[in-house]
Length: 89
Image (cartoon, rainbow, N blue to C red; front, side, top):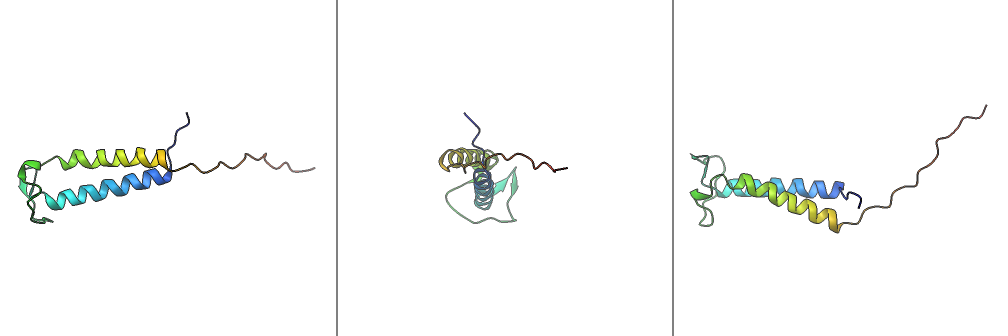
């Protein structure tokens, strides 16, 4: 089976990984034991015990999206190979 790595799969994985990481960063009150004063949105969903988990969740979400898009998006038909032009004498 040929590899189904596509630009669409890579772009989707990058976008999801960045968005998940930034959302989790904004929702987590502390990172590595230091209070998040940079970009914290007060919430009841995520507490201080979540510290560090965003580092693992974002790449896993990215991997899942990459595989899903690679399997679901059909590959484009490959252009037929053409012979190089030969200069006539």
